[in-house]
Length: 252
Image (cartoon, rainbow, N blue to C red):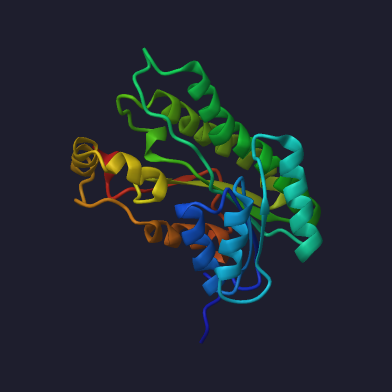
């Protein structure tokens, strides 16, 4: 007997900020399982190349600046124009600036909040409007263990990611009656092009690894299970939650 509990085939999925390491891993996983992927990213060329590389028909890529309300609205309109529906939004993008709170440029703090937090707010509500009109949908945001654990030099990143947890809970409450679930996934350090520049520092890498009880860093593929859960029928009654995929990082 076939089990449709974790089936995402035929679903239209928008990956906002989806051309990066985690977004591309998710897009590939969903495409392999029969979903239709729309890849939106600041780097439009990279988004289009990723879409063209995915298995199955119908995927496409385009430009998006999540910091701009009109760009977010246009992204949803583009997906609706191409597919006629939007079933799942993944908020995948983000930036990270590390440095002591005493010396971190204020501009970098502001950029973190704009890309990591305000962008998720703008993109989520644009998607929610379309989902509510269609009778339901899923919004899933990539947060971080930095939303709940403290690391020195992470003031900007931790503040922006911590805000996502509260935002997820409020949006989940607002949209629950409309059959739109809102959840977050909180990874530990995952090996991606964004993190690799920090992991090249042996002290940083050793410290990060030492805080993960399972004794290894995460891989992009590690978040796929939680993503499929939240996007499929298996996640129908899950909303307002943050699932930490962290090798036990948040236990210590």
